[in-house]
Length: 372
Image (cartoon, rainbow, N blue to C red; front, side, top):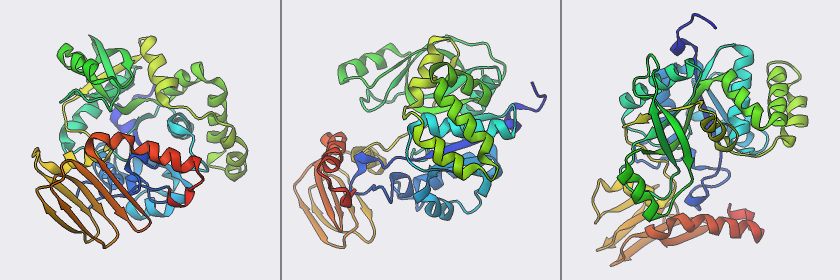
C-alpha cells in the first residue's frame, strides 16, 4: 500500500441521476430534483453538495456522474468542475453502475485511491460535523472496510432504510466506527418506533466510502459480469476508444442498486463499518420533506416556493410550489400540497406525499411522457 495519507488519496464522487419522481411535476427528466433550489438558499441541491465536499477533497478531486442530457446544466452549476471528472451515462443504470464506473476509472488512474459517494440531492447544513464523519469514514476505508455514514434518527421515519449497528471497531482515526450487523428495508411506523427505542439503529443515508479496489472486489463477488463491463469501460475511458466502448458495453450492464451488490453483502461478510453522523440530514424525498425544511419546526406554517409565486392563504398549512404565474388562493386547508406548473397541476396532502410516485408510474404506463 502507498504511504500517502488517506485524506490525500480521497476522491469525492457525486452521482447526479434520477428524476425524483415523488417531486413531480416540479422534478422532471429534463430538470431533475438535484437541479432545483428546494431549500430557499439560492443554491440548487447539486451546488450545495459540491460546496460541502470541496473542504473535504478539494475542487480538483470531485467527480460527477450524470446523464448526457444534464451535462450543460451540471457544468453551469459547477464551473470549476474539471472536464476529466465529468462522467456521462448514456442511459440510467442505477447506483452500482454509476458508482462502480467512477471507482473503476479512478482506480485505473490512481491505484490506492479512496472514494466517497455522496448523492447530489441531499440537504446537510452542519458541514463541520459532516466533514468530521467523512474523515472518520476515510480512516475506516483505509483500514480495508467499506464504510458508510449512518444518520442518527430524530423520529420514527418510514421513508428511510435503517442500519443496525454491531460492536464498536478498533480503527485508528475512526473512534466512532461500528461494525454493521445488517441493513433493514423501510419499516412501518410501529417497527420504526421500535428501532428508535432500541437505540442501535441509524438511518441509511446512502453514503459509501471505500478504497476503490476494495469496493470493486466486493462488487465482483456479487456481479462478476457487471464488474467486467465496468473495468472494460475504465480501461478505455481516457483513450480515443471511449465512445465506441460505452456504446457497446453500457447498454448491457445490469441495472441494480449498490445496496444489493456491495453494502448488504459486505455487511454479511463483516467488511462494512458505519460512522454515526450527528448532523442534520434530509434526502428531500417528497413534498412533505420540503415542508419540514421550510417550517422551522412550526406546525402552522405554509411553505411557499417558486418563481415569483402569487399565493393568498387564510388559516392554511402545507406546501405550495408555483411556477405558473397563476394566483393560488387557499382557505382553511391543512397540510395541503399544491404544485402548479405550466403544463401540470398536483394537489395532495403531506400525508400522501409518498404516493406521488404512483402518478408518475401511471403516466408512464399511459404513454404521457410529455409531462414527465
